[in-house]
Image (cartoon, rainbow, N blue to C red; front, side, top):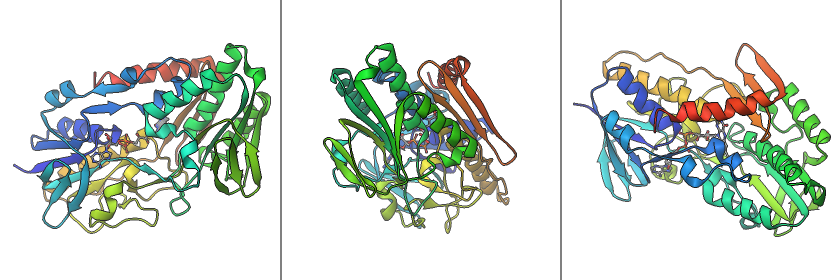
Length: 375
Ligand SMILES: Cc1cc2nc3c(=O)[nH]c(=O)nc-3n(C[C@H](O)[C@H](O)[C@H](O)COP(=O)(O)OP(=O)(O)OC[C@H]3O[C@@H](n4cnc5c(N)ncnc54)[C@H](O)[C@@H]3O)c2cc1C
């Protein structure tokens, strides 16, 4: 019986398992990840308001693995030999016939002074540490920004930073201490969030204006100190900085023997196949796959690619030619803690819905709906 190995228990890895089993695949499936849990990043934005704890966002997968007959290998991948078809982990070697890589991205932490800032992309501990500092601050300047990977323009994530920014603005107003703080949004891009569409950028910047949030745009980042953000356009005060750096591929990518993009991600084709080796696929934040320049690094995209990779894997195992491509779609609710703005983009249309309470409820409902499969 062929053995399928999946690296990563995030959105892409788990959707690949669901799709394989839904398609009737009876093969042995092994999933490798450091812990048997799914971390639901999207709701980290509610941690500063105390609406979510680490437990709420960490979904144990024992039941899911049992239900889908998955062998779980606890470990961190350190390398790969695509010729002899084995994955190296810190807990031994795992062989495979087919492999789906879904081990997410890594954030580029090269800017000087990066230790002074908080990066919510790294999960709960930095987000909680940020929230605790915020609750103790009596006033000052709060800066929020995101960067990119110049060699991989799609490997950036700005959406959650807009959400933290607007959410904290709302939170401070609810706490009746907004007047004690200056909020500054910064980005090296002159039009931050451009992938969301030109109208969305306008709407977001307009929202900042209405909420008395200052902007510092279009200046290359130089670094951070404990109480400032440094850019080529000048430095500015920040008593607490939340920053999402650009992304690159996982640390083990260099030791994988696989083709990497200039930006350090696994290079794949429109069928999610890693170039150069049969039966190896990549999905989600780990991959550099062809698509429009607005293709997002989102859980939803990881899901769409994982479905495609799983179906193509089965097609190729049956000796047929895999031709299935993945749909590119951006769906984003920019939550502001009490309301939300909906942005949708596909090849055919872009939809921007104004800030409404309904979209905050929709985001909460979606969290429950999405996670019910794993609980
Ligand atoms: C604050 C925040 C808010 C977000 N909000 C949204 C949102 O509202 N909507 C949306 O669609 N997207 C959102 N995203 C983006 C979304 O979370 C990512 O795009 C998504 O997690 C990517 O899925 P993935 O499966 O590629 O990787 P991940 O979900 O990152 O999963 C990677 C998996 O691989 C494992 N892994 C890592 N390294 C190794 C290794 N060496 N060996 C073995 N396993 C390894 C990890 O433990 C994890 O299980 C948000 C992200 C953040 C940070």
